[in-house]
Length: 249
Image 1: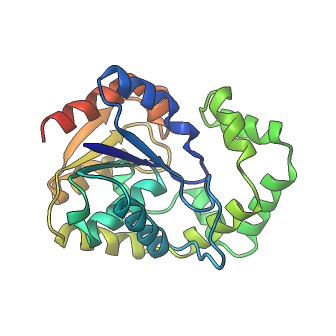
Image 2 (image 1 turned 90 degrees about the horizontal axis):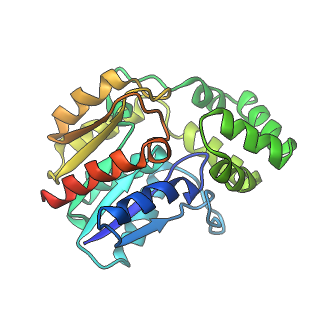
């Protein structure tokens, strides 16, 4: 069984390092780490960074991977997972993803997202991140809870093309688009699912995770007191929960 991992925004695949190590200790080593266009991989010519295009990209990537596939997504990577499962559930054996509250009708985008979605303000925020040094960008990532060995390469990966993709992606995903995705996913053919719920995630209210999981018929892996980058702060607990889920299938 192949485990496929997809990260989010504004990130690179470096966030998966601690979890990959922890999964190996659980005997899970058949991992494929994907790099979404603009976030650790070059963008194709004329690339439009919309949710639909990222879901189509993910489907194409999965088509070249030997299955059965267990799909794991974080942040916007979770959004691509939800979109893929809503449209093409037969491509995978199971899914696991965080930020499930994104699919809840009561969800409101976090403050950074609202800034990126606002013309002028979003460009200003991106320009500021591009203008500061790599060291200062790394310090900003570290302030969000990432250790230096992950913050530094992520900061180095933040470039103008990533900034463009961030703005296009968030502006193509204003409400009610996330809610509509949740409705589509709830109506789709079921695949075994696991909602990862770090209860101190500052970007998605943890109170929304359980209702979404219940609606989707998914299990819940609660990571008490962990934040948005649970795969870095609690890799052992996350790896055990994921490995137990996959073994149960």
